[in-house]
Length: 287
Image 1: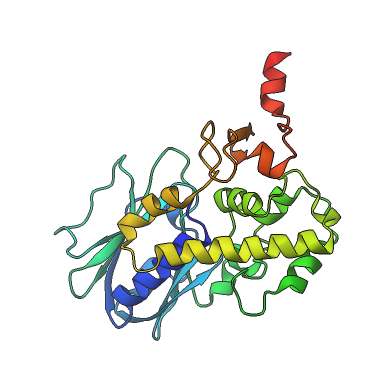
Image 2: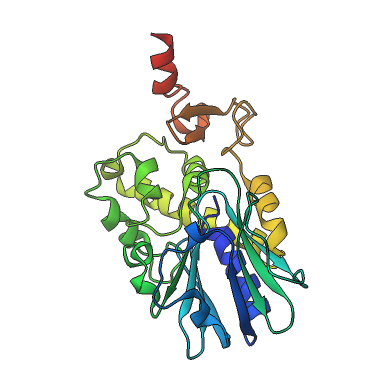
């Protein structure tokens, strides 16, 4: 799933390639991606792109005199830029193509989504805050006013495990499954630790890991073409998606805990005092 660093890199890329250009056609291929109908998708056509903004994991293409085209790439969505779009409208089918945006130059981008769970979402709205997911977002962790005190205040009454708290978009915007693993590894903190139990020193350490991990990932992605961002994300991850590999810090074997629709990865030596975390899914299978 694209998270804050990748969406921020896409924002930079689209700012360079879209701003100042006119959207001439928006072609829906999978109607399921459209989450709003008034104004219609065609309302952005004929308008110049004036800005591209990011809200958490949402991308907002702002047009002058027209509505906003807001996209959430969800788990398996992606944006594919083309310097020259194919001639003729795309044909609906079983492929990954969901929506195409064409500029007056002949360039544009496709929104695609792999797999069978279609969660990619596109909204056409007068104001991004009309998108429910945007309206409920917590503060951006890379904002100038997001300091140690802000993070401590957000977590002080949280009775959830820190892994779940970091992933809650209503609490902190933009962090997902992968980067929450990376942040907790950098902080040397168990994903099962209760958020409200953090000491002031642990809260400071978590804040530094949060800002440092995301800032580093954004810098790695900056200037890359949209098509290279997924590979760059995988290369930069230290523990997430690396079950069975040696920890790059201590050499211990990276472990995994599986859930119904996701998994987390961690290093026992760095994060849990050498003790493996209980994998409840495996425990049920062994009964």
